[in-house]
Amino acid sequence: MNLWVRLGTVLAILFIGPVTAWACFCADSGPPCEMTWKADVVFAGTVLSITEPPVPTVTGGSSIGRQLQSAPPQPTPFRKRTVRVQVAEALKGIAPGQAEIEIVTGLGGGDCGYNFQAGTAYVIYGYRTPEGIDVGICSRTRPLADAAEDLAYLRAVPTLPDTGVIYVIAGPPFRPPLSGVRTTINGEGSQTAASTVV
Image (cartoon, rainbow, N blue to C red; front, side):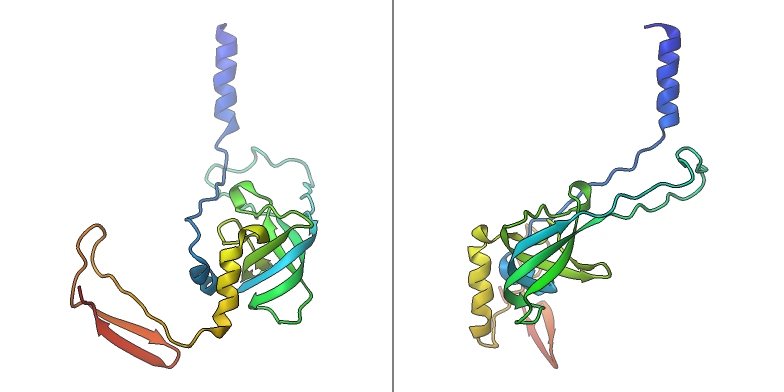
């Protein structure tokens, strides 16, 4: 390779500068009982339509390469799709008679957007944000065909008694649990204290 070609390649790499990349990292979603209490809204429904966000326009020419190196990077907001869903079953957080609801989700890839398909039924776990009810791949949202466990739990909740059992294991991971650790649980207008027993 000739010297000028090599020098040109090195200069091109130097002038390209850093590239911002995003990645979506999710822990495994928990069981229906855990994810229901974390979510603001849970419902079953069929996607009626998906509206893509407008493509941002650049006015006044390109600003690539004009930002000073000492200037802080400008945030790039993620664009969101709007998904209109016909509600079949309101399970948490929306009125029982509500016929339709709009949710938002990212475009996929690094923004954790969920790839909804028009005409497909889902169980949807959403979170209220300033942009609306946001749904992503890190929630337990799934096609209705794969949500038998979710529906069984969600339909059973209203019939369950107002009691439960809480297990607390105290101590560092991969070590035997500790006995005698005092634990306090705060609930709605009540507080319960107990000590762990091995």
